[in-house]
Amino acid sequence: MAQGKNGKADTSDVAAQIEVIKSDIAALTALMGDVASQKAEGAKANAAGMADKVKQTAADQATLAQLRAQEMGASVRTAAEDGYAKTEDAIRQQPAMAVGIAASVGFLIGLLATRRA
Image (tube, rainbow, N blue to C red; front, side, top):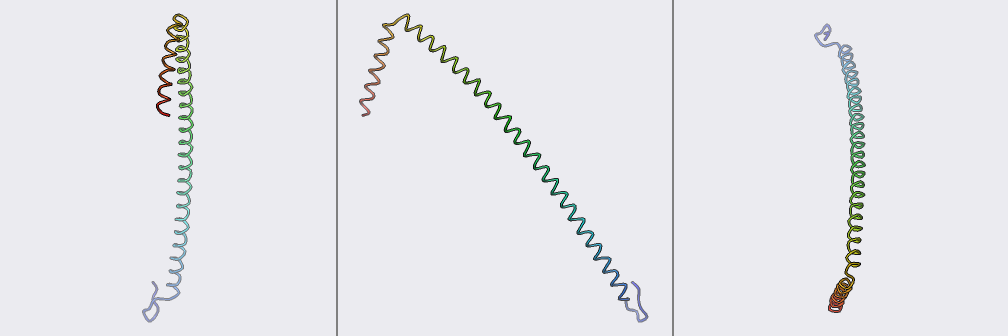
């Protein structure tokens, strides 16, 4: 600091130093704003990337589940067709027994239905 004749600091030097400090603070504030903006943009891009990954994983899992459901449906259909064919063969080989079983089942269902009513 420059001192005048009477030992006091020169006010023009102090004012100049204050202006330098103000400009440094303004530059620092602008720099911090830029850094914060860059960080926000980076976080936004990262979040978008993660959202895309989650969306793709969900789509993959849905496709996999659909394929498994189709496989299970085909398996159930095959088992039902096999059971139907075996039942039809058994009825053709022993028609009297099939009629007796059907009558018994119908009678039991009739008994249960009348008891509930």
